[in-house]
Structure formats: structure tokens, C-alpha cells
Length: 419
Image (cartoon, rainbow, N blue to C red; front, side):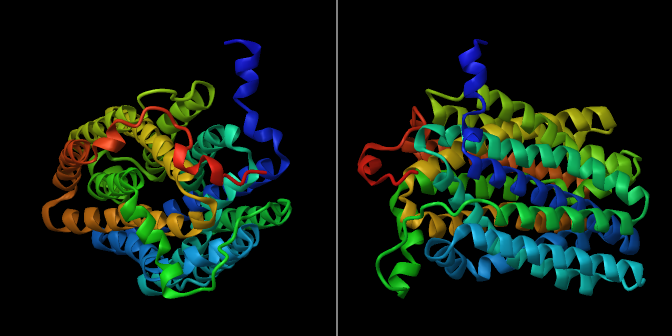
């Protein structure tokens, strides 16, 4: 690698606002991972019921679904940086409440579900704001690099966060929730220090027509529709995160630290691929890379479901995470570049609902199926289903499959509003 190539890897960090944004988002994601591991393990330890693990995802997803029309409009019309800071502050309060009910011995499913619904509400607002803020903080030439680093930050937090969550939970749920509270608070402070960027706002008043503009854009732009819906159905079927406490305790005979390793494995594979993409970005055949990543994701899910060896399971999850990163990188870059800035909040709100559906509803699907037919069949079914979706979408969305380079399409070149 040449010196210029090495420097290019960090192009996005030459912009102060992006650097502050990056570390704020990283700390917030790290805290979410700790809470996720702690709540999942504590819930299963207290109830022994896989169905409750599925409900954890459902209660976090429902606010995003119900507030879709509101959150995107808010992100397009108001200060995205301030929206994100307020949401991190709310997450800090939620972590404090989880800590309190644990210390007081009041932990039970329904109070926890209520707090998770509040977590879901703040994420419903923060998701579109954070996704839409990044393109305002860097020029277009550095946007793909910024998105690769965004993905890396999420994956790094997904590696270290679950391991830390498992280790911290080993020292007690109180320690885990205290750590998450401190990280959320730090994320709030950092986000408040991000310089207010320029933001292109809709000129028209808020009407039902403007609120629905994000949906209309997605349905009319087949590349964006195909990318978003592909992720929805693949992860909805292939997600196995909710069942990791079951695999860790009942199938692979691991403790909380083992659950941390399982949760970290997809992030480990993902961050390796994300760092590679930050250094050597995809320049051609982006659509084909995306579908190849989805296919590998499905296959590795099947291997994880069938494995009875901890190390094979961890390796399969690492491959799954790396393959998913390819898909995420292409999808997020396409959405950012193919969407006009004044629509990004509303489009990303819809995208976040799809992402939430694929993650939280995917967890609900996995938990429900595991309760009925067992954890292993539930995961294997999901992996096979992901492969089927990849084949169907590749045939149906030919324009997406044939996307070559990750650049702004010609019809939007005159509308860019970069700093």
C-alpha cells in the first residue's frame, strides 16, 4: 500500500465535525450492545423463556414502525445534531432506570419491556437523524469513506460491546448497566460538540403529501427500493442474534463470557471487511458484490445453526458478519448517494423501519419459531430463507444487480449540497 493510499483511508476524519460524530455514535452503539447482552441474559436467566427474548426485539421495533411518518419529517426539518444529542440523553435515562430496577430487585419482564419501548422510541428518532447527518459533515468525495468508517464503528462496538457486556454481566448486571449509562452520557456530550452543519430543508409546509414523500421516493427509485427491501427480508429470516443466549447456554454449553464471544463474532468479521473497504473501496460491480454478500450470509447462518462446536459456530458467525458488511456498505452508500439531501431524513426513517423490522422483528420471528420448533430448526430455516430471497431479488431488481460504481447518479449531480 502506498503512502497516499494509507492516508486516503482516513479522509473522512480530516473533517472535525465528522470525527466528533463518529466517536459519539461509536460510544452510543457500544452502550447499546452492553445493554442488549445484559438484558437478554438477565431476561433468560430470570424466566428461562425464549419467547421473551423475541419480545425484547419486538418492543424496540414497534416505536420505529408507529412513528415512521414523524421521525423522518423531524430529521429533515430540524437540527439533526441536536435530535441525536437529545436521543442519547434519553438513552442515558433509560440505562439509569434499568440500573435502578436491578439494584432494587424489581427486574421483571413487563417493566423492562416498557423501558425497551422507550429505548426504541429514542432510536426511532436518532436513526434517521444520524444516518442523514453524516452526508452533511463530509464532501461527496469522502462520503463512501465516511460510510465505511460508520460501518466499522458499529462493527467494532459489536465486537467489543458484547464481550464487555458478557464480562461486565459476569460481575453483576449492576456493573453492566452502570457502564452503559456512562457511555450514553459521554455520547451525548460529544454530539453536542459537533459543529452545526449546513442542512438542506424542505421549502414547503408540512402536509400529508410532504410526510409521505420518503415513501414515494423509495417506491419510485427501484435501486433504493431493492436495496432496502433486500436487507429487510434477508435479516428478518436469517437473524439469529436473539437465540444466542439459548445456543450459549443449552447447545454450546457456554456461560455469559461465551455469549459475549458469540455476539462479538459477527462484528469481528464485519470490522475486518469494513477496514478493508475503507482502504480498498468497491469501484466496480457493486450490485454483484452486494448479492454475493447476501448469499454468503445465508450459507454461514445455516452452518451456525447446525454446528455443535463453539469454535465452528464462532467462525460461521464471523463469516456471516463479514458478508453482511459488504451488503451494508453497498446499501448505505447507494441510499446516501441516490437520495436528495432534503429527503434524506424521511427516506432514512423508512430505511430504519426496514432495518428495525429485519433486526427486531427478525429476533421476534426467531424467538417465536424457537419456542415452537426449537432453536436449531429456527436458525437453519432462516438461513435457507435468506438464500432464497437473494436469488429472487437478484432476478427481480436487475437495475440494482447491475449497479457498477458507487457514485451519485447523473440525475442528482446538480442537486448535491455538500459542505
